[in-house]
Structure formats: C-alpha cells, structure tokens
Image (cartoon, rainbow, N blue to C red; front, side):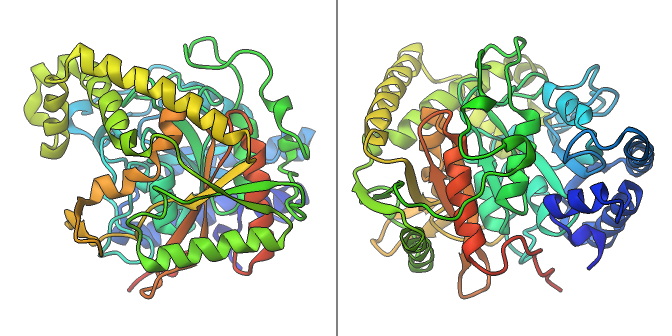
Length: 473
C-alpha cells in the first residue's frame, strides 16, 4: 500500500509511530495528484512546494516535541471558498480573478494550529451556487458529474489526492458530492464550525465541514475545527465539544458497535419519494443493518415536507443575491450563465416572500424538534439517484414527473440546512453501473456525536469501508 492510500487515522498512526514521515506522505499524495488530476480537475491550484516545506516543518516538530495531535503532518485540501493568507480565493469564478486573501479563515487557522499540511485549493461550483461542479469529473466515472458544490474536495479525497478536505454545505454541497463519489461527508450543526473568512452563498444556511474516507477521519477533523468564534455571528458560544458523549472526540474514539437502546427514525414520506430502486434498496438494507446492531427502527412522518424546497430557495436565492449585489451590477458578464440567472432571479424576490420563508423555517425547526423527541437519529437516502451524466439537465421519474438534476440533488439534503441539524453521509452500496450510493444520518442540533457514533457502527460492520475509487480509464 502506498502512503496516499491511507485513511487519515491510518496515516496519523503511522506518523506517530515514526513509521511514515509527513514528507513521505505528502510527496506520495502530490504524486497521486500529478498522476490523476488531468482526468479529474479537482484542484484550482496545487501548492506543491509550500506543502512539502510545511511537511518538512511538521516532521521536525514531531521529531522534536512530538505530534500536536492526530492531524499533525497530514496533507489536506480546502475548497476554494476558504481563505488562506497569501493564497487566491477564486470561488472558481472569473469574478474573483486576482483576489488574494489577506488573512486566514478561522478554519484554516485551526487546521494550521493542528499541524495539517495544505496541498492546495479545490474546485467549487461557481460561488458554491450549484450542485454539479462542472470543472470536475466524478471519481468513479469521468463522464458523470462530481456533485457540488464541494465537488473538487470530494473527488480529491475519493482518489487519494487529499487525505481529507474541507467543504461547505448550503443545500447539500458537502453531502451530495460525498455521496456521488463514495466518501464520508459531515454537515455539522449550524454554528458549530465557524465560517469566518469563508465566502458565503447564503448566510443563514451556510455550514463548513469535513470530507474524508471514513467516519473516524471526519471525527478527527471536526474536533480540530469546531468551537466558538466571536467573529462569526452564527457561531455558538459556550460548550460544544464536551457535549459529545461516548468517547474522546479529540482522538476520534467514538466507537460504534452496539446500538441497543438507540431509536432510528425511518421516514415514511419525502425521503423515499422519487428515488431510484437501487438507492432505496441499498439504504433500506443499511437501515436493517443498524437494526441488526441493536437499534430500534421507528416509522416517522417528516413534517412540512411539501414546503421544504420552497423554503430552501426562498431563503437562499435572496441572500445570495444580496451578497453579490455590487459585483453583479459591476461585472455581470463575468458570472457563468447558470449562476447569473439565479442571482438575477433573487432581485425579483420580495421582502414579504423572504420573511414568509423565514417564518416557515422557524415552524419547520420546531416541528423537527418535536419529531426528534421520539427518535435519536433519522436515516434516509442522501440523494435520490447516483451521479448524473455530465450535461444532463433533468431526470424522469417512474411516476411520470420530470425534475431538474439540481432540484433532485438538493431535495433530500435541504431539510438539514433549513433546520440546522447535523447530517452525515456515508457510502452504503453501489448501483448497477458501480456508482456509489450514500445514506444520510441526522440528529437534533449539537448531537453530532450521535450521527458519528451510528455511522461508525455501520462502517465497522461492513467490508471495504474507506476504499479509494477505482479510476476510470
């Protein structure tokens, strides 16, 4: 096994044991990027020299005073919305040509403090306003979409071009590409991971979170990045990490195993409506596996399901337009056509419509809180279908309805953004073409450890967890 094939936890153990140096690990990952990037387009920029210098510095520090923690010397990537001092933050847009960050985002700062090695910046759908990331190809089938908007981060992780990566999630933008590329992705509770220095799509819906090969890897990254930041108005003050039960999250030790006493909600509406048979079968099989591990399955009704997409778009569209107001008027031709249309549509949204969406969101949060009174975790498909063909605009469902691909991908992810609950996606199978299928686990706010524990239990009970995507020819 080559170093780039190691999961974060495996690499960390090898570095701590002095069996693998950060320089060897980083060089292996950089070589992997060089070998596959031409087929994938995951990265906006690769800072190879800076990464090797940081790895050498980490190696000296570990040899001297020992590792700072499990991320010390581990190579990672950041979505190109996340500021790093002295590096461009382009948001994969011509609008940002020449923009260089003047200071680190809080997430980059915390990962730097943990000793992680930055490889470079990964592609996003322009300004995170889309669900496909057209610059990037799917890791399992290069003729298909990577998913978005954190498509570059997901693909880099899926092929060994990063040991872990950070993404953002406004309507599923971590979970969609993670599911389509067969990796693990976490949208944490709203306010748990600070967004300071991260380009916004929609202030009240944006989340920052990790993508990695295993649930344990995600735990390790979350522990390094979570916590209050007074510079982010949405950041939650007071204790957060010590709310995580069941193990020392700082060491990624939330063992899964026995789930007896835990109630898993299985939706009887919305989440299994208009999904492919293969997605439904794989997710239901995974839910049955949770039952075999001791969980009690409980049928639940998803409240206000008919309003989910209207509320998501009613919040996101005007907030995104407000963020881009000046540049949209100054340089409209620099935006990609699909993003420009959405931004211009936001100018037509009335204040009354936006306020009604906010009121509906409050009602939905309350209804979801009542739903979680009877369950610990909600288990459902992450997306209703596997990766679409590049350029495919719509999907036809068995009931005769036609749906835009972007609407299809956001439909099952949006509730967790609207309500702010933690949502974890992990691989649970493949379709007839060998494309990955993801299951989504959600819990009440600040019970991130619960979804991680359940995800870890499932992951430990199946073979092949954390494997790399077999690159297409």
